[in-house]
Image (cartoon, rainbow, N blue to C red):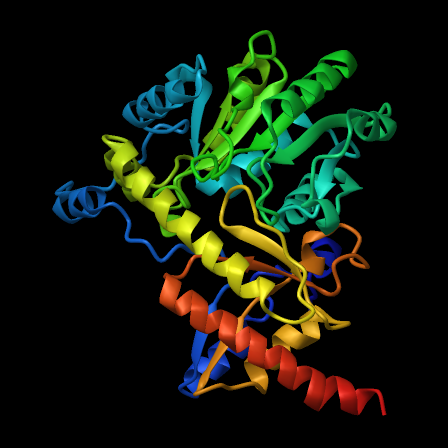
Length: 403
């Protein structure tokens, strides 16, 4: 019988979705599962955008331009002016989600065997994209003790060698909720200019910054050849299933390479682009309300976790994630147990084991990523389930195992 490729066999499973079969079985049994494992917002997608899709009357859904609708590229460029950037529509490529934007970026910028320096923990799917692109990730480990602060410029320079092609950041951070300040970005930009590297930044969560203002790397003059930004409508407009993202760069050589890959996959989604266009017509009122909700949920989560014995957490500065240290030796086993064995009033909670967000899987074994994407009442119930689950796990599982 034919078998899978070595690449397909060895690629890591998503820590966000790896426990999904257990959640589905619990749901099949009638259990309510609070999903804190995945960044799927519960906010409604903007109503005007949904109505536009309902009223579309195109008799043929045709191929569109490989680089995306001109009208959408223009709308995105206009939106970026809010962040003191000088982005033109020609600098914007519409992609099938941020996922494709990341893949196009790596394929367009890196040769086989090139290296990316990335602070860890990082968005777990970066590992898969790097594998597909035959690019090596060089991690710089950050710590929960200081809220996953960006390492010093010296730490980055220590990792640079002849194979280094780029520094890759997620800002604001998934899974950490960290926000890198303007001065920190300036330090990294000096490094990439000195060593002739790219600075690739996933800015998908830019609108959800709670304590400080956001700075886009596109706003720095003189760095046009070095900077590439990844974006998406998935989180900011609660439109994950639309699968519309963006790759933005002023580097003309990179643009030419990206366009070739865009042509290979023909065009981005027709319906998703129409929805995105409607979202960008008047985005600020919707974004402001969404930010208020996440800011309130952030406090609910932090206050709730702070009252659970043995849990270590911090107040995230941005996005809607938090990495949490649990008083268990194996968070993945605990997360699975929550779905298979624990019930409180026929309810349980689903979390994402955090070791999957580290390049070195020995790190984060007692940590989970929590996404505070549920309404406040459900979030409190989920935290209560976690509290009771930890107590029962320590009593029923850990105590037995130690005998």
